[in-house]
Length: 265
Image 1 (cartoon, one colour):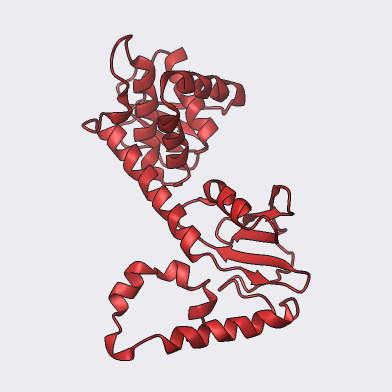
Image 2: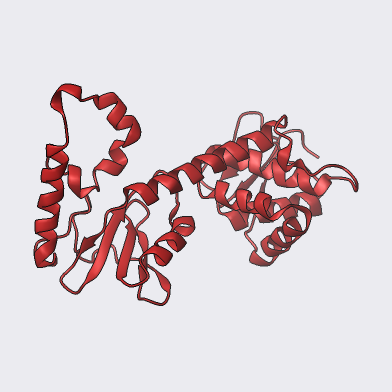
């Protein structure tokens, strides 16, 4: 086996799981995983192109569910929603270590002395923290057809793990929660959530810069409510006690831009 073998994959979770399958099938351990468009690292002896295979990925995932506790498996899935390139190598090595565990050895998910376990766990915690922020800072706006729209642009792809919260809390309303950064969202119709995307050239009902509904689709009372919230936000603010640094720490700019009470202030 070459000393500097790298695996090239498509940066999907199925692709990473297929890479794990290939590593064991080929009896080799790559030093790193790289994306399809990445430049080969220096001193690379060889590379293997991983062809994503859903069946192989499903086999690896099913085996992980047998070997790890439910929460540990969920943590692996959550970590991949970070979309961070720095996760690829530690997550790959973590999964490989799970399959190399001998009978009777402790499960690795709580071995935080292991740098790969620690890295994956910390990234998963960052994703879960962003999920919490989404539940705090999402703002819905009412359209003329009584559908509520909220636009977000989180650092991590948290929609899949936050959507159940809104489906449970706003089950008596039609709403659309849209991720402007990743150009997809979920529409709730009183019964179920449907994943949707908009055509690239299709006109949007909102301003992509701040998520504000256009005047011709905003309901008659939504404008009044937004003005009231902005007035309230100004009224409760004590100028002499303003602490912009603390305010940005509690409410980062990436959330503020889509919050109606702080827009146009």
